[in-house]
Length: 295
Image (cartoon, rainbow, N blue to C red; front, side, top):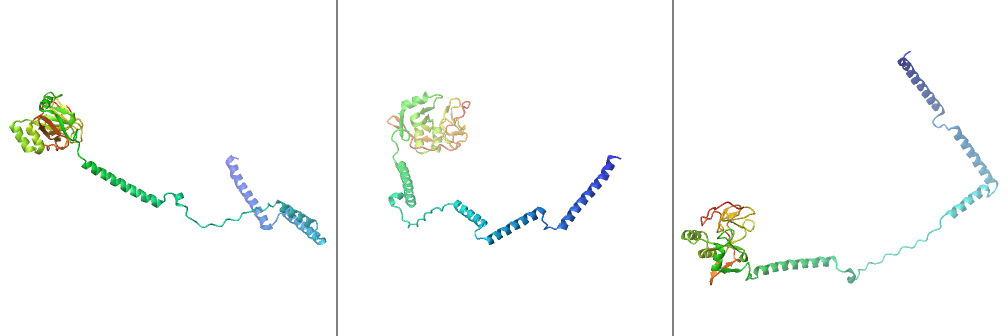
């Protein structure tokens, strides 16, 4: 026979034999009942009952028999093994609270907050008063921020004529300014009269204009471009003609300027009085670009 036929016969036979074995086991368990005890368990229970009967008979026969002596021995051994009692101190009763002495406490929270508030207020008032005093303090009488003597008329004219990198561009460090010659012809002076005023116009009438070195855009120092004959800021490219009037770039106005005065043949620049430069589009001299740009 083939292997498939053998397996087809063997598997049902094995299943039937397993079912028969399971059925026989369940039948025997039902016959004995769920409460059935094994033979070893019943034997152990019988021996325990016999020992209990003998012990009861011995107790009835005489007082303090062997079983009583054994119990007394066990009791004495248990007492010896019991640990000795430990003495426990009685807890102390709580005492009434009393505040500590002030010299031991130091600074309380209330005192700290009060003192901090007073110190902060005093610091703020002191700073404000110092700022007010600095604002009202007299301006310096010498150096930048005051009226600065830059030289005689002859020396200033010579410095303007021999200035580098371009003629007619003279820088005076003590005043942080360029002292520029302003044309004195009638047409240019008429344009200046219509554009400028006050102390700046007085200096223009004398033939000078003092331009602050700072660019009005972001405060960079504006150098001179010898090729274009203009002031050209290297930071952002603002450009101004020879007298500081804006020609191009992001600057909001022309170069700021200081008053120029002549006293007893000496030229003075009042660096403590700044006048804003002319508005965009101002061109009183008509000076155009004279060469390539530097910036």
